[in-house]
Length: 364
Image 1 (cartoon, rainbow, N blue to C red):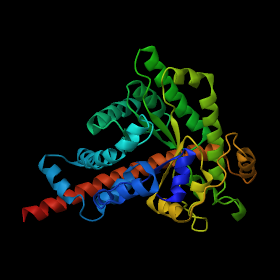
Image 2 (cartoon, rainbow, N blue to C red):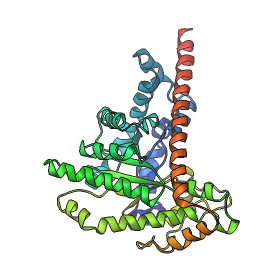
Image 3 (cartoon, rainbow, N blue to C red):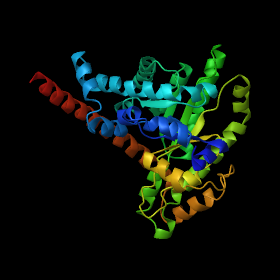
Image 4 (cartoon, one colour):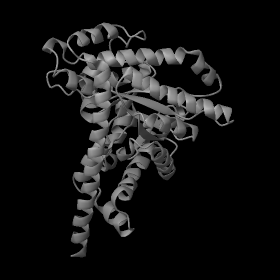
């Protein structure tokens, strides 16, 4: 087992892969990451699936079969995605069982086109989770204003949720409060309080946006500061009387997940965020290149301070440079939702084109 990734695992941090494709399932790459790199879960998004389905011929036979069954568009994509995710979920099932459901998860996103529709998001989350037929399948709901009530309703309904597109402490707290309300309602209704959830804070996009506005000495510092500030809020929530009451009733905490941890700036170290985000009781989901880089030359130093460390000092420095962190957080969330919607449409177009091409080839 790789010593670098093992150190993070032993620290109490889960390492997840931010990727899935039929290729890494078929050739044993994912199984290798599990056995050698301590990977205990994975995340996916429309962009990841669009690239996977568009590359090579790994999905061709399944697409032909599903078209013959009368599936098209979104229904065809969901069927393809669930084929992959069920297989991945089975690979992670030992980790899921060993941790009592805390770890060993895979994730599938509700349509990003529903980001502003609470009721349809709740309905879609329930349908996707039922169709997945795996206990370790998270359904991803964005932490947008319309998504927050959908998170609460889905948790109350017993659907495990990965809250996506969180960019600030405030957005994280809103998602965490929705989770708590859902669990509190379950307890009041006499239902099992164990409904798992993670809250995914996106990091590198902060630095992509801020680097355009500040001097080079400030580059790639804001995302880490925002993460440190959010980690402080996370630790405070876990220490609160409100949470401890729910924990005594048998609930598991909603874990904080670091997302978008691949370094976007070629001048920055490729393991920058992984090393900065070493923190117990969290998850770090990373692209394959970042996982491989950390396994090769990553270092685990001091853990993230529970009190936020220098976060507020750094954020104040950026404010003096003209960066409005509150406005930027809202902008990044809107842009993230728009980007996923664009990827979703591109994904469906890719599937439609491929279905037509394959149908034409098989008819000749």
